[in-house]
Image 1 (tube, helix red, strand yellow):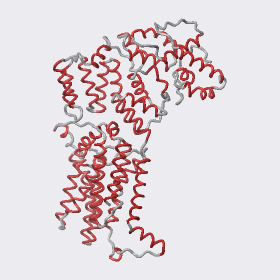
Image 2: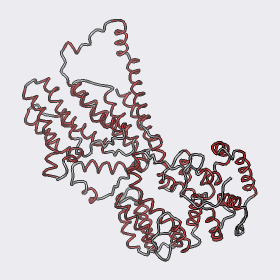
Image 3: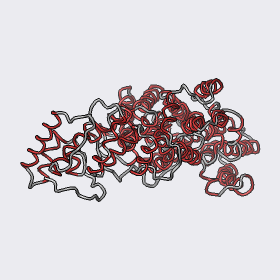
Image 4: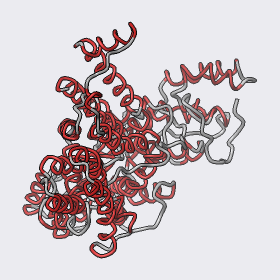
Length: 622
């Protein structure tokens, strides 16, 4: 058993660390944890609050990476040891059953949205059950008193997992203790334990904590979604498998049954011999490990992981990794498209490589991410608004994000910057006070406070200076992501390059080439060494469509000869298949799929087609 358990736990640790990635669990769940008595006291007014506090603290280690995997492996190890000890005390030693929780916990870790309260509550229930079965007095009165006290303490600390403790203790009394002392009174005690287990949550909901009965019973039990069959099966198995296992371990056996009956037949004798040999036990163990590994691997949703990792990279400003992950996705959604656009802008490639990425809008977002995208929506909008220089709107939306997500460090940091930009250093310090109570952002808060004490306007900070330069002088209510918004920003500050590039991209995506030409003159406010490639492509296509009737001022730039040659080759190949759009698309996608010409004609990149909004046609396409 030690070798098998060690091997399974090692594989579990490696799987969570390298495949699941604990950082993504933290990013998905985004637990709020603050140092100090005040935050701790908030968890004392409800059943299960202590387990939730432990979850909030331990999940912070996921933010680092491998320490989070070590925490989950430690909890899985506790589950293995406690299960083995419980079954042994109830009457039978088992080598295989104790590792079943590891497989269940691996599947739950794969789903990202399941909080660690599931595993902490499970381990707490197992530990309490072991404490009871190993230390319970033989006398009935003290025995019952110990059960009731442990039930109340466990319910206050963990909530719903107390029901598992009550059920296991009842099985122990009905079968294991009943086997040693087979009296009617002893067996009635087991039934009474079940009644007490149900009465404690009911009393808590009615008199102590004034919470709904369903919440009183289910708090911190596995959170399952009906659409997620893997999570449902793993959560049910985690809590339910112990009940038949305990019955099996505690079931009374006759003395004759203890001695293994001699197997009959050659096959039976061979199997019995195999079970008794080290090779046989090793084979069974390897088979179990293989089945568990297959279940863990199959339940990991690769697309969900990729979308989470892409969003994680965007949130941390890891632009190259964002683009690398986006290239691996065949379809994107509105959230990921915004992230890819930001990554392209910050790497100087928004008008150079946008159409090298999928513009196929997937409506099939993994169900587990629907709620996540709703939770982070205001945070992402606020971050974008601040990048454009719309400080007042960024502040308003950031406060909405606080209401949705709690005191998240990225939102708090943004509000610090916003208040500095608005000349309110004292208000900024109030948010720094909250950051002082976090585990991983205290140093940033201390450094920022020192800078504010020396220079309340942070006039030497590069980001502050950049955003302050972009800030409009007058407020105006405009949609967050629209032509009107970009024009408003450019009117306030013609050198707002992000607004210019997003405006040009907006026109390209909606195939409004006339508007690209109308606003091309704004390029003189920026230090482009040459025309961005997608603008070259749009201008060439516009000239071809309008037959050159409208002179175009390139404002000191010129279209590169290689771009002209590529367009000529594109038109030749297109003309070859002009009567068969499907064949034309297939012929053009490998060489020209990354160009604006391909997007314009086929309403999408080679990854898929998404028709743009209705537009006023400028002329007939070839």
